[in-house]
Length: 321
Image (cartoon, rainbow, N blue to C red):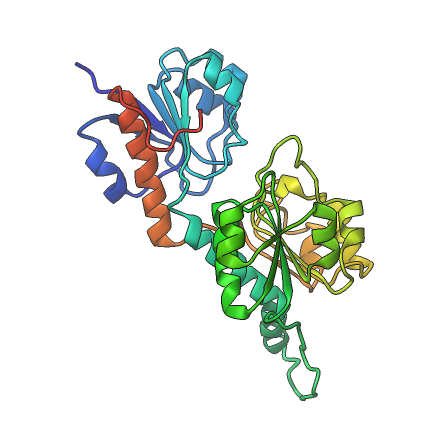
């Protein structure tokens, strides 16, 4: 009997893949950095029992309609806005993601981005490398305190709660906005549930960790930035589509807000000519929220284990649909 066929849309390390070859016939896109093109993805998916994919690949209705053997799609991410879930359900394809294993790592990066932006760490490094450090003054590269300030977390899911946990060591006041209240988070972290508008008005640091949905698309636009304090700092470690990037640029350029730290963008990878990259008060990262070696290995293994469970007729470990 032939082994089930899996197509993986990016080259993964052999030491991760090899233990699963006893169960599956595994085919991988040969590039580590260059994403698979749409035509190849559709062609490979049409012959596969399972696809392990990344956020950079779009799995639309036409892919599912032409993938008669496909039983499971394992997304190597927490988010799954790259997958047409309605089409997957229509064609009885299970979709899984990789939550939990990346929570702490992403929270670390989110808070690190906040700290780097507040204390102007990247600017300071560049200041030295450019040969500008030839004097000292009391306000040289002066940033903003983090301790005893107010953080507003938009999206109090697993990662939001874990960021809140990290703020406690800085004695921060925690506001949060979420689709529903989280009494346990309020009790554990002293967080206060509030409206989106009040959070924007009251926070020194606004941290976006909400999922990307039709309702949250570009929720951080011109009106949102106008409500924020003029010395507030905006952090986005969720999805680029939650932000109107032109509105963010204008708010930074006009001094409506102080600075921004961004791990995600509307279109990725972004061009080196992107206007936000020209602003010194913006710290930009290439979507590396969960990018520690340990965590990425756990994510790969969880995605493969989800595929194994489904193809063996069992329930997936972390199903989306």
